[in-house]
Length: 277
Ligand code: PAF
Image 1 (cartoon, rainbow, N blue to C red):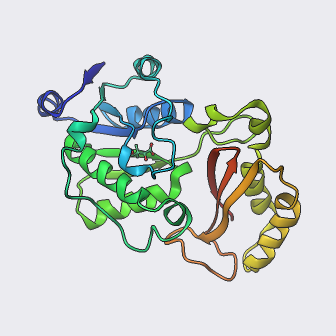
Image 2 (image 1 turned 30 degrees about the vertical axis):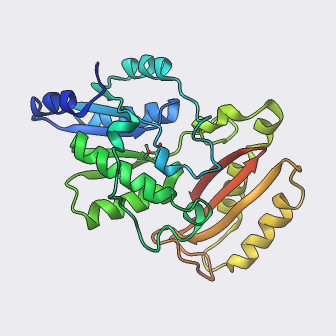
């Protein structure tokens, strides 16, 4: 497996390849969810490139950029076992050398994580655009857990004519339903036990909502069953049912409805989502 730390050496390798390249952008602290992205890429492409870069511009001033887990040796060991061809490990100064140009999105970032984390998607789009230009992938792989991120990047690919195929890969979950996330490692035993509420709410919505049902009714059911008695260390950032294509509010459940959740478990903000019908 090649390890590249600068654009020049990566480009030299990339130019020597005329077969397909699958790309999995990550911020490291890799887990089975990332391995699943890599496996999907390995299946569909001759070469798979993974980038590991904790992107400072997508973290707000009071978020966990400094403390975000960095486990590079373990990450490289795991990637060696997955059939990944190359790892790209850029450094801050290379990605952001007195930057003046950023990529941003209208409307799609005005709700859910975009509303709660101002500037987050501008940071994501900017780094992903840079990485797409450096890596020059045939296909790019993103997890469904960050569904809003996928929709926004997909729109960037269309609007800016990036020549690549976007792939959204299903969420990998723990046995009890908790979606895998690098941030799960922040959870103490007690918080971990209760973190399962996110996937329980999704399952409950899937089992109890029906086409045409008033969304206010769905919220009432979810509030009564789950949110009225959550422990003090949990704080709901949002539980929202929206149209999954453009995140607009609707009055009734439709075939496009998705439930989106962000809940703090202590200091740790967990997100999850799922199609309802
Ligand atoms: O999903 C992530 O891990 C990040 O947002 C990404 C896409 C690697 C950009 O930094």
